[in-house]
Image (spheres, rainbow, N blue to C red):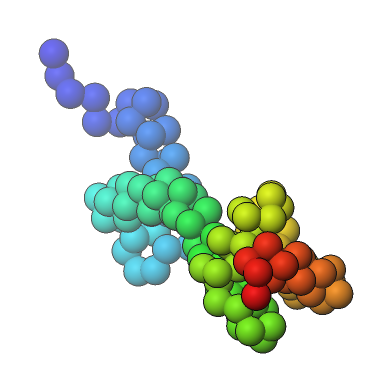
Length: 119
């Protein structure tokens, strides 16, 4: 059976790939052969980085909490140890937000942590 060169399925598939490659630089947005590789790689990066984003945000939260704790004379690891000893269960996102926006509440948490650590 002969190969379909100008069939609608083939045309639609190529159109879909080129539509996904819209905005790419050079031949990547107009040449199917090059666009196919660029789109495949782009979709792979998007899939992978949606998962990596969660770790990136966690890193940012830890950095912010650490900076706020050090201003109060505690390291991050001692702070987390004190949280568990005090029985305080607040996630890192909320703690980082508290350190930035509500300084008095964060200082109250630090006071409880220091009391639990016995310092």
